[in-house]
Length: 59
Length: 191
Image (cartoon, rainbow over all chains, first blue to last red):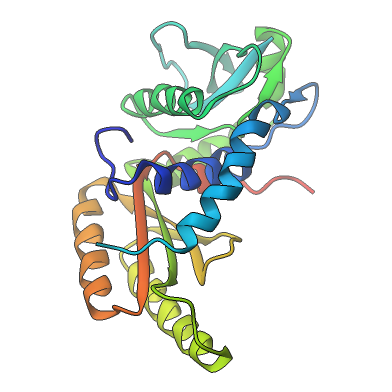
């Protein structure tokens, strides 16, 4: 959504992106490896982000 | 290893590095699995790939981090689910997802004030849902977190309505992002 961000704040959008990547989408069963550990770093920074977004105000 | 990115209609011909594997009447769109950890920039690059695929036709993103050994395994991953996935592709055709989170503009003074904010947020949510083809509430720490599936040609109207509602509710902060691929409108996971 690079060119089409409705709210320009990329951090606000990152919360929504992570919410979708980690909890949305088609869940596949069977012979797969689910590799979410590799987003741990982003996840940790998301926690800080969510608390800062809590305080976010619209313009 | 390869990562499954999305499910599309049969016969999709993506540009490298994305490849399409045909199986059970759908295209399984995949890329080489990323190595090492992912940064926020990696996530945005992955998102840009999925959004480019969305330009070619309806798409169901796959949960991030779904890795399989090879293309045969990618085909096997959707075997038997073609009908369900094609029906869901029809549901999202021509529409995009808009994310809406509603929070108090300032911390609520007490429980009664919070209840009033929650009621106002639900009113905003119902108003916006009327402009959407489908709506999914999502868990989150906000007063309300939702995803709306909106026809492409109604996105502008939806966003204009968000701005009107924000002006009417200065005690709420309405955060709207998108358009996103239809992450929140994939088939329900089997239990």
